[in-house]
Length: 398
Image (cartoon, rainbow, N blue to C red; front, side, top):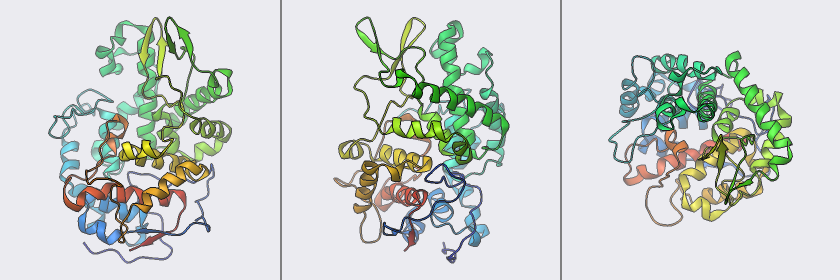
């Protein structure tokens, strides 16, 4: 593929899976490159030679920002990817995938068997599909329906049977809250920030989180129940879904800057030793989607799960928190140091393709479908460039 000519002042790229670039601070203005930091070399030519179609497309549009020069061949790249087309074709007639929302394929699945709707939508967005493509248009009705705070048991999806939520009001309330935040995140990522339905749901979510972060409970969130420390029912820490929603709503963050500032402080605090479990009615249930502090505290954590580290750093960059946190910046710089002379990332140790068992990452990693040869390094190499762009760093194309 021929690289489009680079323009020194490119116009904004067309709609893509990553949505509008999030500013580093709650501001409507685009981020300014930090003069104190050197430019980041981005191996666009190498990626065009080795990466899968979605990574090529997003490298051009989201990192290189060559939107003014995109031709028809480049614009069609997301729809030439075999796995993306396969996923789109698996959609059911009601707009869902497998009448589920947050399920992910098992390790033994050949492709996308068992995938839930929210993860399928986010995956297509990560592949570079626009929100107005037929599968995503067909899915948005059910996603917007999940934003409504109704009690229709049909809209509990997999939670209705798996957790018997249909017969337990406390568990049903928990399921509806999870699905509401996850669907809001998917819709925000798709680019619906201006839709009043999404903004209404987002306002209720941020108000609930803000009230929790302002309360004494945020400082000592756990209470003792029997021989176990648990979160009480009224505790409302931010979920990973709420963070993703806010990451793709920069204007909304500006309007709620006080709560966003509290959130930044919360995410920089050390994680408690206790697991995130919460009292729901009379049951103590795991809440792995809740974020109780800094989930990327050190180098060992980053090395143990490189894919998660990329996801966390990208999320923090979109929220505008990354370049304000010295530790995360150092970890990001260390990943940059692990690149070769071409700007291609390689593992700090070993030669295995990074893997992650964190379900939230399934939609975004890996986008590459050939985990062999140089293709093993395309995902992380692309994400490092994307994170730099989101931070406001100068990108130097090579």
